[in-house]
Image 1 (tube, rainbow, N blue to C red):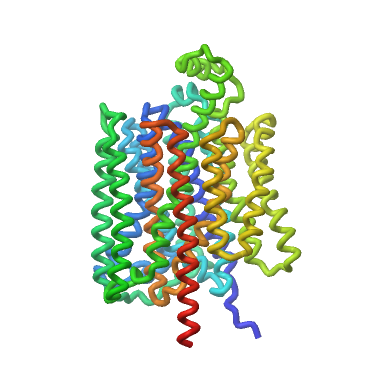
Image 2 (cartoon, one colour):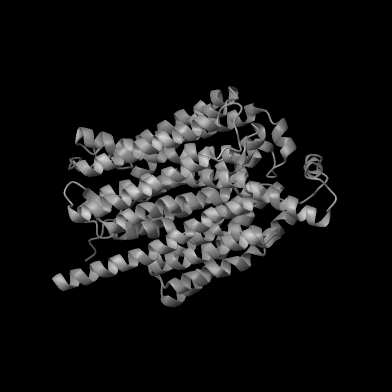
Length: 565
């Protein structure tokens, strides 16, 4: 007899639309960053504050939800219901999107960051509610399948987001400096009004759809005093650090040569890591009131989520600048007599055709599409297929996803000539498929292999040039693709009644997207863009270490459980 809870497919299909929005907006920031850099004449570091504002909002949103729940001794999300949590998050994002209209009109970069922060706050609430919502739309044993489906749709949003955003801004997918300079800000204003309208329609659909269950649960919580104090102290310090960075780098007459921001970012990251590791050490001695912090896999996982999100975001956020420098390097190799300013003038007057920088939206689309390739391939193991069918699907599915990326760019207006530039990337996908086979469907092993491949890819991008360098950096998306669900599942495994609390702490660590991109941007300003890509190298290195350490932790826990049985 089959006692499995049936899946609520109408509700699930509605939910995945929200996942699409997250991907669309997050990836579109990759086009918005070079736009703002040119339009407002920002340094590379300043341009990365767009990511800082957006992803720091995730942390603040999750933190406020946690604190207000503790103060009221009632889990707000369980009290509201997951459905209403998503609705409230969408409405908050509507406010942020509409706020972009006056922010852009003011021509003040700080106001633009504020509007993006509000959008991110809404996304934080949506994401905190949507993931357990998806799991509870059917039997718990098939929850991973629904998250894989939602993740695949999210990746589709990241793939077409840069294309649609560039078309809406410039009428073309080519990032032309002269077009950006001439662009009226009203175009961008109305684009965000349309985005806000889409958020509002989604909120209405969620609120009044009878097919969507409210999903309320027991809202009583235990007050974990030490955990609450720790999170509050960490939050206070990080808010001060981020505020100082924004204050010193968004005003007039900014000193781009100052290293103060670099020291602030490194100090903030160091404090976070030390505080988390210290909490776990103290909790091992006396677990009272520490809640989920007594589990080493969670604490290491929190640092891993921080690192993963930061690595994933920073690769693409700095890609546009890398492509411009790659053009300069390639051109100077052939034309040794031309000056830097002379080359910039050639770009402005369209005398150089097919340069890499002009293909920024297409390559950012390929980067985020690479996550779709990996997630679609990773989802194969979630279905009940024979071993032979899985092996075949693992080869075919990634290339179907690749064709979707090519088709999206072609429909978006890319020339056949530019599309052909992407075709050799089909060979890079083989490396990822090989990585999946080596991983043998074992989460920790797969994460370790993909971490190593990520390190190799970034170092290749640093020390090579041309299409090899471009594809090496873009392939970072392939190796990031399955990391989120793997890190998440390994981090909450064995937490028992603290699983919900641990999940909330992990969502807070999306904060990594606020720290690593500006860190890389500052290193690029101080040294050069190639040197700055050692930041994602370090990120992949920690993720590889996490995979090794968490495998040992779970093996030890398993042996202890067997011995005690």
